[in-house]
Length: 260
Ligand code: ADP
Ligand code: MG
Image 1 (cartoon, rainbow, N blue to C red):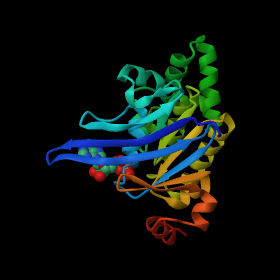
Image 2 (image 1 turned 60 degrees about the horizontal axis):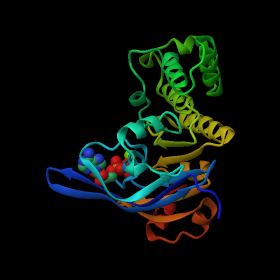
Image 3 (image 1 turned 90 degrees about the vertical axis):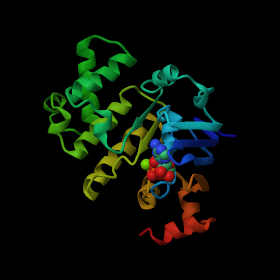
């Protein structure tokens, strides 16, 4: 049996709403190996973000985990306290949000924000941290990193902000990175550029990553394996080639028909 970085077993989540209790995840299971890129694909509302937030300890107060496990480094993330989860997030695991501005402080230069993450993870003299910030920006192929580091988020394009978001997520040297629709708001050319950088960065560092997207074509281009979700359940879990050659579920076949 190969080693597993993250093992999600029978994850069930419900929301408390004005209309009562609504189950949104109904027994989600998948495994992620170290260094693997896993795609989670499904239409809007299928429960992809709630899955990511459950693992990352970012569920809102109206959500409740009603069952399951998320094993990561010998711990069950679903049973850790908020303090321990906050500490793990920004040390061993991190997330890239759909809207990069969600992760960025609007009133602090982006370089200083990356420096904060590095300093929290690995305190070092300011000059060394500054050099690491510039290195992180260069890895994201950001030209003129000194100038960009002093920019505020509002001064940067969406694609540039997302590159900063990825640099920030990687700044703590995580073992696990979940990217939730990281390129959905971007135009097609920028999307490919950002995804190439994302892939190169996680591959170079051996980070296990989950790419969440509604776009099967995108997931199949970048991921090793794909989990297909529909209405809070996993309906298929297969390596990309097998998924395309032998889709087992009717919903997967439907997705494949609408994928170029
Ligand atoms: P996806 O990311 O796949 O588009 P989500 O994980 O955001 O889907 O949502 C899954 C389901 O959970 C949806 O049906 C959505 O309506 C529901 N949901 C998400 N957030 C809340 C909330 N705060 N309150 C009630 N229902 C929610
Ligand atoms: Mg979502």
